[in-house]
Length: 88
Image (cartoon, rainbow, N blue to C red):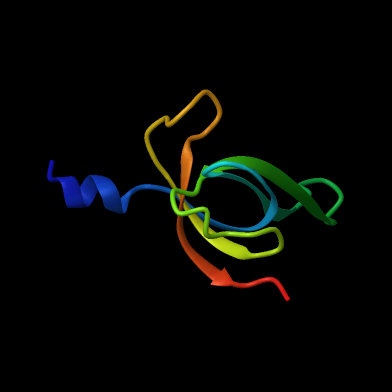
């Protein structure tokens, strides 16, 4: 198995930065919505992920694309790929 096929299978998510207080780490809220199997209502959930931001580039309110990566610390398993939209 080549490295490119391994890298292509990594999960990517898009979310909003809700905290940038730590050095090289941001907290990103990733929303998810799905139809409830019994009640046919749309259920909205969100997950908070700790993300590695090497350049300290992302600020609170920015939309970012993140990618799954090797464990960087106890909680960090994701890293910033790009900042999609800056906060106003």
